[in-house]
Image (cartoon, rainbow, N blue to C red; front, side, top):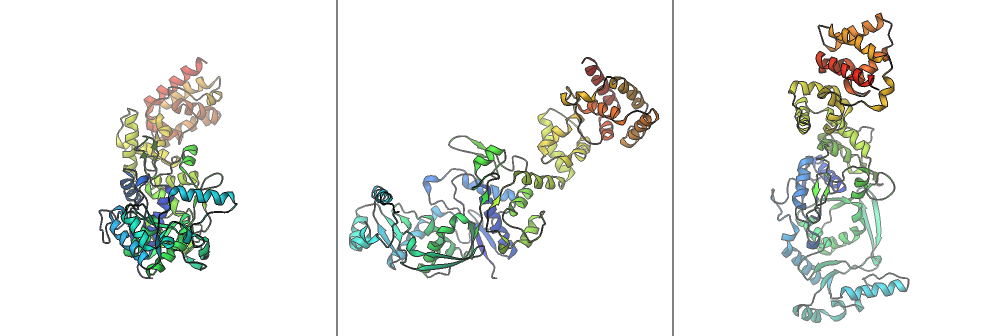
Length: 505
């Protein structure tokens, strides 16, 4: 294989959906696997849907994920410009070429007249399609002739340029994921390629750009599969070699059927955008993976396995691993269900791989919000005790608050574990703890368990009220680690406080 050139070509109409992120990722992996180039082109031909800030959001998201393009707007523009709105003159030239060769024609039909034709067809139980069956009778240059069309254009009449779809042709196509696909050209409509405002439609612009930017493979979502025959026929009309195509399966809802949407995320409490997004029109804020505390490595690993695997049961891949293993032939045809819990599982894994200092610094920000100050060494010890039970750094406080602040209340669900004689036993235990000179976890455990055994006391009858005293609930890591961390004075104080609280009950 020659070194491929692949692209991700989003429209700046809002935040980048997680499905788009996966498309970008698969393009990136394919390029890296084969020593090729991954570039990004901004397809902003539909200026009515343009949203300020969306373009910079897309670039920032890819940078954060570690899959930044080699070429894009303002970055190594070998075939620039990479923003379609800056390439209007190019599209005009190629639209004219199609007109000159008879592969396209001018059409003047108004939106109202076309709507009327659609309604009439519906009433007759059929569907209106603008194609070879009726184009010679409609308001276009094929019907009225090129001379009249030129006069009307010169007079300022609005028009579009339509592709002249070949009649009665079987279009046989090959998709790298789906294999051979056959379309009947007679069932297709004559798509609009260019408008009188000087802007092309997606169909013309992406074909021209993919050719001029030397794109070898087009890897995109399956929603573009119905457009494939048109795109291949456009390549043929220009006399160009078409790239190879691969259409990725949908990312599906966690529950039910259909494509994953923002609404699914809002309903089930997970993000569908890589970064937080504030709608410039409404001010509405949508959550992002970065701000929710996901690691980019976790997001990439999770997304890579939505619709692809390496043929084994392996699940954990670094980005370099994915670049080495990725193969388009291993992409599934069927859609992949989005699993929020699996998403968290990946983040849990990558959290465990973070350096101690990184976790300390992240947790310190959380502690600052709680007005808690602690030494790095102490924070590090806490983190080492609780991180195995966390999916996110944001969970550290709920898992460890008792290391920093004495419980101010006690979980009512565990009150039954404080027996009538628990207070007396805790007083006795306090005496034992006060006599331990080496207040380390191992030494405390040895002394306390020795005392329990010597006095034939029930283990649970001591350990449970002790944990309630220290933590406020029956949770947390190894009890004797908590005692060491909290220290002798604070431990005794908490035991006294618990005794006083439950004695009042």
